[in-house]
Length: 282
Image 1 (tube, rainbow, N blue to C red):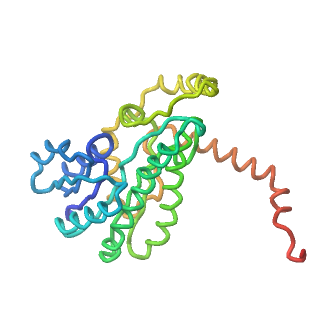
Image 2: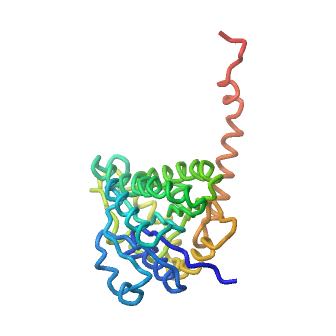
Image 3: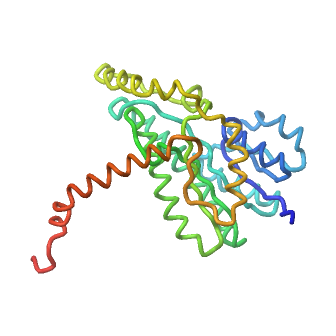
């Protein structure tokens, strides 16, 4: 039985995953509100899908603009079914190298942007008693590496609030999914990224990282186009996952990471129990 077309609201639609997922949704007959800082980058899609594509300008760091844009999207199509918080960028630099302005900009886009969009759509989804919020996290949302501390901070924050959100809205028929991609051939670490001014003290860690990740970079990175079919399976699932990796490699990495965490917690459990204290103590 054919299902009714879904209405999507996607941030960061001009390139990368946002563009690919916009095309995937439109290509199967769904309706898409595609937002970007410069919606002119979407003119070719508007020409191909004039009735099902609505391009809107949006800077996700501007809360008032987010609310107005969501309201306009809802008024245009009458509902929202899939909301994807995709807008974001990478910030490269050690904790000491990153400036206050860079750190704030990272959090404003990668964390507060999704927060403002999520808060704006929740009343609509709650009234519908349906909807699916998809947060584009990263393998960097569940693990951390040197020289990406602020990026990790933004994605770990996104992971935490989204897990709590999922429990808060489940009774309203709203699903939440964190998509955690591995390395893909996108410009996340290219033109879209920001790099802090390097300090010579950290040349050693950068050299060790380059040596460590050299073999990884030598392997084929993920093909972003393949994520189009994958995202459709996620949004069409009756019981979508809270978390899903996109790409090969993260599952093995996280099995090792969590094994190390559990081993450390167990090793220090005696101290942990000591720190609990006794109810008899004053």
